[in-house]
Image (cartoon, rainbow, N blue to C red; front, side, top):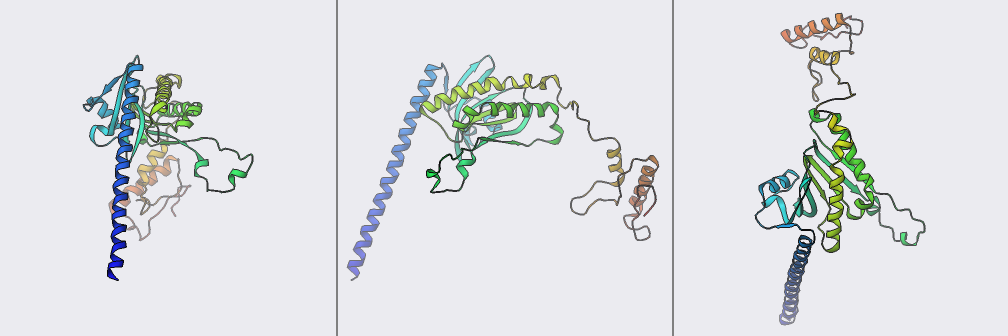
Length: 311
């Protein structure tokens, strides 16, 4: 009985091991074939477009550019790099690793851009809809339009009319280019003067060649953004027509203290007032509270109302 049980188990183990070995071999063959096709594509592009192939030793400026756009690891996560140059400067066609995935990207710099941490991401809502087996039989099912998601995080002191104009112009540029943005799923990433036009996944063959043309045209139009948006007429930090919230409010904050998200204001205060006499009274009380400590005047902190009376 033990012999009859052991033989099938051994056979299954051998079959499983054989399947694993065969699968691993197929994966290696597939990867080698992809590498060969990529090498052929890069060679054809380099010859037809008169580009330079950058091998294992990448320029330090390129590595810094890649790391400034989120690349990590050796060489900033770059592989298969082609270098081109025109009157606007250098650009690099490459595959880059960001996080756990690979992207096809065109990297370059624009010295007139002053926007930090900007990402414009194309979304396809139809791809995220719940699966419906009857959808194929429905007629007139409207295809949802492409959506662009704007992600922009910047230090508050760097947000001014100059940067806002540039962000608006870049967003409009991607919207106007939606007929080429949508098929490739093109993303736009800007960090200071560093720019990446990239896809979600790496490309090869004809798709790689078309992507290069599309990305270079976007680069050409993007170079006009600072001038056409009127941002170059403004110096960095210039507010333009926006009036900063300063003056009376800033002085009132100095009187009442800065609010604390956990415990509330450091000094009790009432409604915001602009009368000089009342502000002086608030200042006097603030100084007294700092001397005695909060809550020591009769056991109850006093608050100044709108008419200057104490409550």
